[in-house]
Length: 302
Length: 302
Image 1 (tube, rainbow over the protein chains, first blue to last red):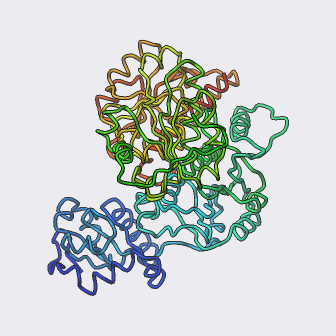
Image 2 (cartoon, rainbow over the protein chains, first blue to last red):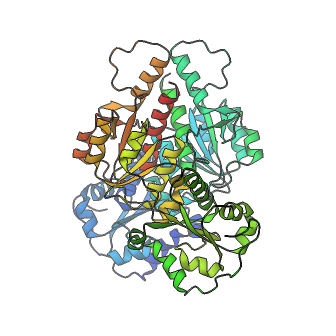
Image 3 (tube, chains in turn blue, brown):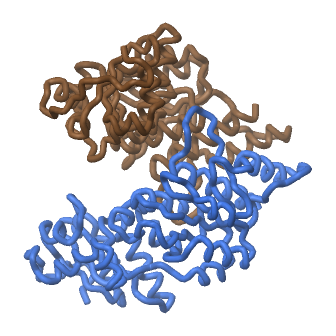
């Protein structure tokens, strides 16, 4: 174990070393699946990973971070990271490495001087549903890692209880996706590898309403929000369509095609985000943000 | 002029031809500034460009599209584009080109078979303000072309009347930015090359309120929205902080640093988007979406 405040010795300088190659294998999906590990790059992601690591260990759980590789410059600039990593009982290796070693470990042009090898953090759906969630986002067949990460981060900001990626989605442990989450991957439970049908049936059984975001939806999000505000002001609502205050699972579709017909059919309602201007449609991140924030606001007023 | 329905002859097949090089110069900023032209790639962007082109010509304005280069395959798949481009009075060249020529003209790996050479579409700020705008977004020192385009598209969806990019922002005519707008660059007036101070002073003089999006803002967007909803339900509001229904200019900062102190000081109020979860902050696109949709909803209720 390293003493706090003192950088560990024995810097890694050979980018072709076996250990460097081993870490670099985590930039590919098969490497990640084999070891059930992934990479978190840069001070922000590593800070959140270390926080989750200590929270997990304190709760008697498994460690999040297995190893940390950093340049001396980075640890000088971010001494709090070295301190967090070397805290008593942290049970992780900190290794000083050269810029070239870090570049060889990651797929970024500028790896920002630090990379953590993390264990997969996804959880089973049953665990999420047992915690009586109020707001869940599910991404169905999302293809772009940047989009996946952006929506995860927006869901975290909106206070969602979990984000679910359908089995045919891009891998959220992809380095670009992890970067786009800006640390949110370590804040919010993530569920992977299930079909929309499996998730919707389980959610409904747990009393969670299911809304499909759909540009052609029969309900309009403005209407749902106005009804929710009206309830908050004790106004009478003749025909309430859906109470946004209720525990809700939102389904979001693929970037290009949106949700498939059979996916929409599984939801309780299809809800359109209003387009006030001439835009043909919303991009996935924009649509998800508007929907999740609408639910969050309605639920916050309770 | 080409007859509708009949593809023009004389296909371009030499990627090294002078004309191809001339078009390719528009992928760089200096080439664009010199000719005040830019490239719109792919069927969706070209469709919106042609629509704007005909609208401009009908209104006695200058043409938007100067020339169109497309593969035979693309025109077969999208005959409506050939028809729109060849309509009587369209005043533009349509040239058939090979895939290799299109690849040489653009900076994309897959140029989607069609590219339009367009004249700059930005307008003076005075023109925007003279039209009594209700909702304007200004991006200050935004650096990423994808972000710039995404926010422009979100502003279009929220029905904003204009989007302004500060003089130190990324070029919205950058091909990646144009792609990210998904055609919205041709829907919504864009103003370029002004400082935040110039824009804020002119907006205030035109009676437009100015809000700075700021994670540490003294006002909270939820509060402004709740007050707006309360007004809609004729509830009494003791101390209204800012009426979202009013004509509003939103200022959004750089991706990494947000707004600078002096930029925030120019605004009437600094408004925080609520973060309900553990996310440290919102990304630019998410924050802008939430703010613009909040204004749009309040204004729609009027």
